[in-house]
Image (cartoon, rainbow, N blue to C red; front, side):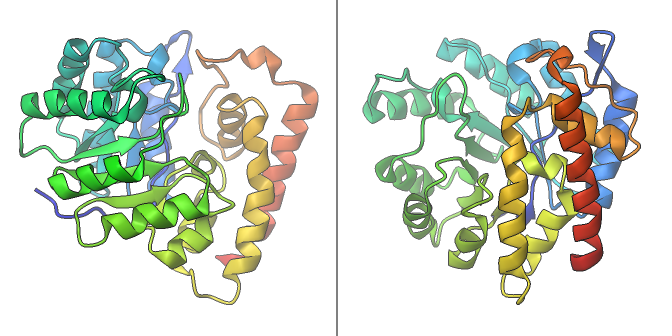
Amino acid sequence: MTNHFPGGEWPTMLTPFRDGKVDYPALAELIEWYIAHKVSGLFAVCQSSEMFFLSKEERVGVAKFVKEHAAGRVPVIASGHISDAIEDQIDELKAMAETGVDAVILITNRLAKEDESDDVWLENLQTILAQMPEDVPLGFYECPFPYKRVLSPRVTRWCAESGRFFFLKDTCCDLEQIKEKVDICKGSNLRLYNANTSTLLESLRYGATGYSGVMANMQCELYAWLCDHIHDPKADKLSDELTICSLIERQLYPVNAKYYLSLEGLPITTETRSKSDKDLTTTFRSEVEMLHRITERMSKEYL
């Protein structure tokens, strides 16, 4: 079992579709694009992958494909337990573990309802742990859908001390909370990967391990550079620029990210299941084209 995963950038992967089905040839090219742009690992079957709109067979198939196509060049982690019943989640998690991914990632909001306490959450977690193979590394993702459940300090400490968890995709977007979690995780297997651009650089300097967010689907190599150069004199300027660019997340993601990747020359359609690409207006398209041009100019400056 690994005792840690590398720092740096871990994209929340997109799932290409064509004519209503997963487009595996496009997914293969997307994996190559990520690796060419210096990612440290790949997070497959997450919200960016539209996991809530994939069948169990599709979720397992995508994870297996990504793991096999990455071929050991970078580690691959995957989530995909979307059911409400804990018994069904255990079935989904076991199926994901059988794909051979390097870690299975638990969705924090699946372990308890929004109005239920940490006690309920921990009880359900222990039920899941009892059924999962002990040699399978695990992690957490504070997925915003259907509701965001941020790990409390108490829960973070329990998970860190358990020794079972290695990856935390943090979405709290609050630097003080991130610092508290980083402090709790010190000396344990659990490492924090920040999903939020505006707090990213400061969190990395404090001890966060890396970045795992949606903008890695567009400004990929710039985030990899930032993670690797946190003390470079240019890092603060790049952080400011990336933060402003990241506001495009609010403009019809993941449709806009797929359009961006098509501008990169990838054979990816704008088809998604979570949103209609008919809402990708001429103005939205022009904004993505502007971002692409800006990113090319930034790349010449930093890379």
